[in-house]
Structures are given as structure tokens and as C-alpha cells.
Image (spheres, rainbow, N blue to C red):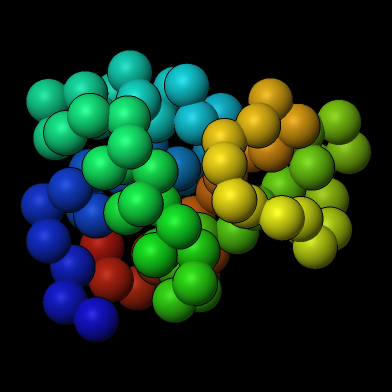
Length: 84
């Protein structure tokens, strides 16, 4: 997967666990909410981003059909490798 500017912007935000709202705020110049969510889901599917339970910060399997306050997102080692 070739990493474009929007993907890099999202990955850079996720050095620490972040909510989708924070991703939207930091990357608002890259596209609207629906577009950013689609890109984030693609990054999750390719293993560049991990979904965490917001209460426990564990990587429990979670459904990511739509943004939820119970979810946080964090870059993985694979995602970090693409930023280098």
C-alpha cells in the first residue's frame, strides 16, 4: 500500500492513543469526516493502526463500522515503519 499525504497525516496523529474526534480535528484540512473515517478503516485493515478499547486501552477485537467514543486508535510498528 502506498502511503499518501492523508494517510501520513493520520498516522502522525496516532503516536499516542487518540479518538476519532481528535483525528478529525488534526486532519480537517485533508478531507471531511466521512473521507477520514474511510482512510482510517483502510489503515486498520492493512495493520497500520490498532483499535483500542477507550476504557482499558487494550487491543480487544472491536467492530469499527462507525466511529465510537469507546474506541481509540494508535499507530502500530508496521505503521511507524511507513513513516520512516
